[in-house]
Amino acid sequence: PRSWVKLRMPGIEYLRSSVLVAGTHLRVHTGLWRCALVTVAFVTWTSSSRRLQAAVKITAQQCSVMATRSADVFTKLRVPQLQERLAELGLPKSGRKDRLLERLSGKTHLVKPAGGFLSTRQRNRVHSATSSGNWDMSLVDWYVRPPRAVGPGMRNPVYDLGECGDMQCALCRLKRGCESVRSDSIDFCATEIARHYKEAGRSDNGGMIYFSLGCGCLYFDWELLRRITEREKVHVAQVWLLDRMYRSSPNASSFEERALVAFVNWFGDTFQIHSFRNAASLRRHATAFS
Image (tube, rainbow, N blue to C red; front, side, top):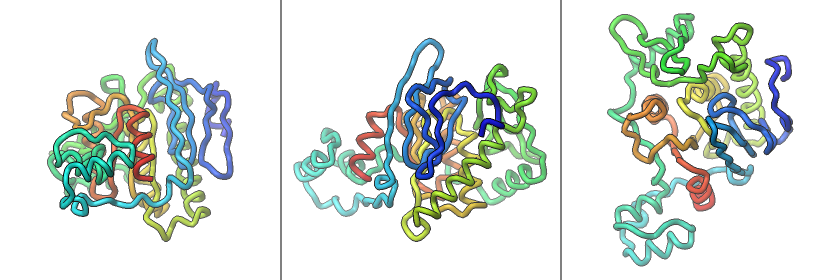
């Protein structure tokens, strides 16, 4: 809605069949504007002096149930047979047998929790802080981050998550007059996703695939996914994250990678999380397993 804030973004249309379609001429800084994309997304964004363009199309048919392919089904096959199946799916067929099995089961981009899932005590502390209002966001290392601690003696397990900290940006929650723009965006997206999910009749199938493009430090996605899974009762089967800062095996060496670790530690026992560094790898995965 235009009442959120004056956004100079041409080509935005709200369609009944999708949550948001952003025109191909839309240009925003990486991480400043993002939305859950249910059916179609065409986004062009700018980062520093470079322009990174991505066109990713996920149709309603592709966002239906993605069958979980277990590597156990293929363990008895020989390498040539595995390579033949990979070739049929349009996937790379080089490497050792264990790599071929991983690739064939769709787990190449699967991100696993680092050090295990969070404890119930940690989750309860976060839920209590967010619901009671003891959740002051502050600017740290250019990112707007949640509080460092949740209660005495406990580091906030999602402290490494973050969002845009550019005080000149109309989408920065710390900018005067824009305090509610993020929460309004979450409300709108959650409502539209829930409506689309129910209208599409997906409540009885294997769940929805949530896709986020240029997701950076993932705080927006963390808020939105909590909202749609906990309050709106949307069944999310998988989450696909596309950002050129992500690696296939995060080693927590950058802000974005540490955020990905925190995100997976929170949600990893709820749904599968796949990360992609470029549109080509996402396209191969979507074509092979959708």
